[in-house]
Length: 303
Image (cartoon, rainbow, N blue to C red; front, side, top):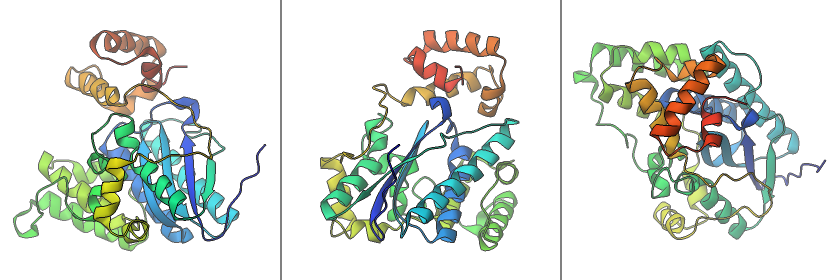
């Protein structure tokens, strides 16, 4: 087994696959719960995060640590915490991510730039968007805008439900806690669609641990960094990764069909559905979407 190498003070590429390659990130709530956990643990462990990109079935981040022990503790803590929250929200037990994660240290500005480009371009690479900053869950859009996906939130005209949710959210952050699914469900209950997006933007801004200025320092400015993303997708030469040539956009299409046509009430039902039902849904989605059989097995948690 290859020994993990960490160079104190240097940036590392951290890469994680889900157990069995299944889809884990289905919805807004999955991404928000994960982000608050990741950011909370990063602060507690004093890890500097330059880039982050959770994808439906895997994770990438670029972070600076001082030791192998610090890196391993950081990854183990946020991975375990998110698995516990995700499992609890679905009445499930078991591992969510593979026990071993990949990491490669990067030295020199060229290597770090290539890594930051690579992590942030996962959205376009997986055909989820055209430009890096258009992928909501690499959080690039928050580098220059506190509400990139919602209208400005004015408390004076906000609904009582949104004001209460924001107050509880701020209290949760000040207490040093992450957001749990049950909390998020309670906060979002009764909110209009536009208010849900306002709350989501507020949560990201409150917990956001990404060091945009640090990342941009390798390029000269945030504007120069974004231009670099457009012209160079980056690379990862030091890590062997499993590749899937298909677009991840099919997962959103599958979710839309299952929810809008009443096949399921929530995507959280999917892992616990009987195998017979999963196979029936798989046949429906195979005929209605561009999803490949391998993608449907991942989406429906079928072996």
